[in-house]
Length: 122
Image 1: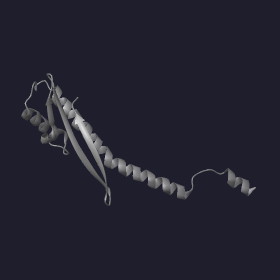
Image 2 (image 1 turned 120 degrees about the vertical axis):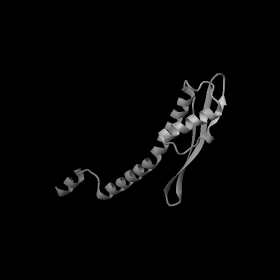
Image 3 (image 1 turned 30 degrees about the horizontal axis):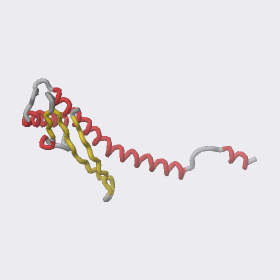
Image 4 (image 1 turned 180 degrees about the vertical axis):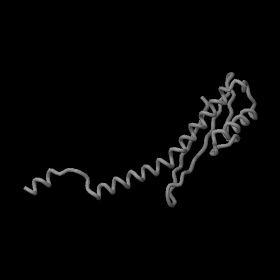
């Protein structure tokens, strides 16, 4: 009778719980390091779009675009790129802005995560 009772029990063992706990902790740590980088990229793209849609900057010069980016970057705390990194393309009546940059996220010991970003105002 005791043998059939043990066969019907279901659940997770302590060792299985420990393995899943370690996996969840590693995923959480990786997420805490990677998510802010993607949030900052979204902020950079939002800033570029805001600059191109700004009514006070109709047919702007490169220095006006860069000054506008500097002001907005200070407000949004953008530190990964500078105004010098902006590539300005003047098309048919509309200015297009883009920034290419790389972020290196140290994970542990000598292992790092290398992420390339391309933010555009399109």
